[in-house]
Image 1: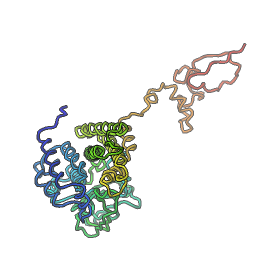
Image 2: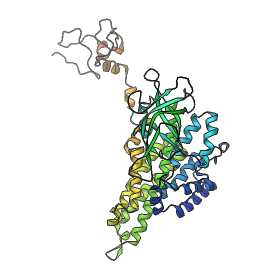
Image 3: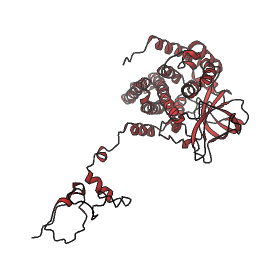
Image 4: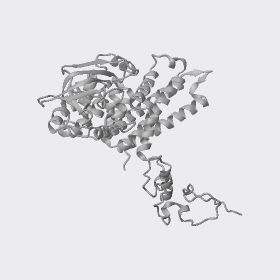
Length: 462
């Protein structure tokens, strides 16, 4: 493994940092999020023309740059530094991989080129606050119950009687950039209970029966929308036999690496702004950054941010580690943003201060893609860290006595019912008492079950 960045990657980061440094300061961010689109459309087109940012991970045959998801993660580290409000995450990290993995050849040829040039943006819509579950970030749900499961709620899909298309009915909340996206990828449940399954559908922004409304959210740099579908015509993405939950889980692994890099960029910038402030702010005739207590706090933050950056870079190379990297990056961003507010003193507690932009991003990302403890718990479950190896390697006699205590055990199984008169007393599987022969115990019972494992000491008559 070569951990060094290539010349192309360094150039992408340098150019992107230069553009965002000029066009995406705190004041520009606050102005952009209050527009109808929720982002600066002119800046978005500039990033698409000069860097091909929307298509950085799209193959060249579809008009993209042809880079890897690792390059997208490195680019998102820079967008995270500036808290860039843009449809990059929703389009490039969530929708493009799904269209590439599930779409037919005709759908890929029709959709990927405009997505690569930035002329078309896309958003992934899942029912309710279930984005982290749908992407398998905090748990596995191959049955697709998060999509409605045939019950009330969610989005339901019904095929037209003539077989010419599909109709969607339902609603979804917390759709990233759903109010401005030209294309929606809607996860819907179909088949009822008999053939229950989850499929993805393409819905255009001008489709009849589609209602979209921008929601008031904590972090305005992550605009969200609620969508309603009332018998809205839709096109099936790919084939009905497609494994949509598996494709969503694969997309979640890549997206978690991208999100981790973005959170690391935001945490690093929040720390840099705090260090700059404590060097200038004076108290008792000296800069507050010269006090030992402040130095210790900043040193701890630096170590945490650097550890999260290392984890994010490793996840960009191996997306299977994206869940752990995302947990560490979100925690680093939350702690760094909180300390930034504390170290800025009274001015930092004012809601209008720039430090709150990072604090809001930390809180909103953890609500959308976390929380941190669930990300770690799911990663531990996948790795089998808390599986008890002794349970699988228990001796047969021990498992037999465990089955004896189970009222659902099969009474005809000699290993499950040692008191069965048909059991073979010479079988060692019946336990130590079965092969112990006559004893001098004062007990006269002939049907006493064997003692629990390990056997208790015998009582000898004296």
